Length: 228
Image (cartoon, helix red, strand yellow):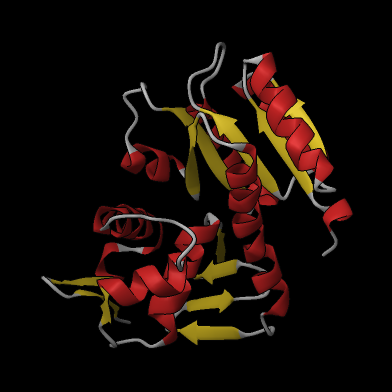
């Protein structure tokens, strides 16, 4: 995918942030869309279908957390990459952000060159998706379509955010295999994001809620496995 075809939605209630971040990313050739609060972000996202959303956490009318949660419930936006913008002084929990459905976070203030580098790293995931060969696997009553990011269980379609889907696909691709935590972090998150083991636990908990608790087994001190 060419840069000129990539749409980035910037969401922040500070005009200076929108101007600086938007200018630096538009100079790279990306299409830039802006919003000043969570409600406007949802409306713009539904209309423009961005590939990446960079969103502030603390905003009036609707904060970034709530907006992220609502966006993740929309099938047409479930696979958009979302990263939070957070100020160093904010009492912000990485776990809370990932729990809301975010893929990453960027700490303010950030230097323009570092910001651009971070965005390029996030958007590399789009290229990885384009390279992925169409593949479906079936485990028990669950069918997983890797190309369409679609899960069908007992004839019911289940929508998962990107990272939850990738984690589920990894575990379900080899039922019974114990995936170590380091292996999960490497294959699902790669080297683009620095996350802790707690992040995996949050995503596993969400998968248990949506897919079923009995499918996911915790191997204490080691990792997780999927059982049919």
